[in-house]
Length: 195
Image (cartoon, rainbow, N blue to C red; front, side, top):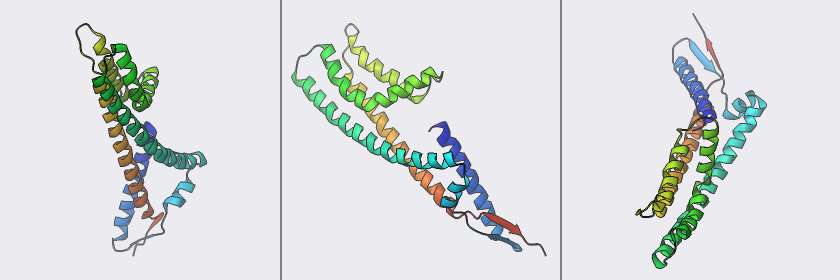
């Protein structure tokens, strides 16, 4: 989860807690809560660039999920084809590496890029970096004297990592929608009447 998404979630959670508090106040004798602030109205009360980012982020989420599914499917088909080719040919280790690099790079390019960016910013121990090190290690281990190649395993690990990232993205999207739905019940004002 990115830092922006985490801070966005914390702000939304704070607002939900305030809404829950205000709703609880409404049930007390002598206290009334009026008004309702919808998600649409709330978005317009933020700064303009945040509102655009909210729509842009949601749009990228949908494109990202579809794109990730396409990449996962393409890499899966190519991985199966590569395993079949490996079983029926007698190529050199370099040729098999090139064969497996195609599905590996299709499914893992974003992870490798994000790992390089994190490393450039001094954040070496994030999940993308660790996954990149593990899979690159699996790709290169076959070049050691007496070692067997681990090309399919490297692609499988990256493939399963991307499947996990896909499910994480879907869960984050659902959580965001749930929080937005809770925000729809949030009153924008609370007043106290005392006898």
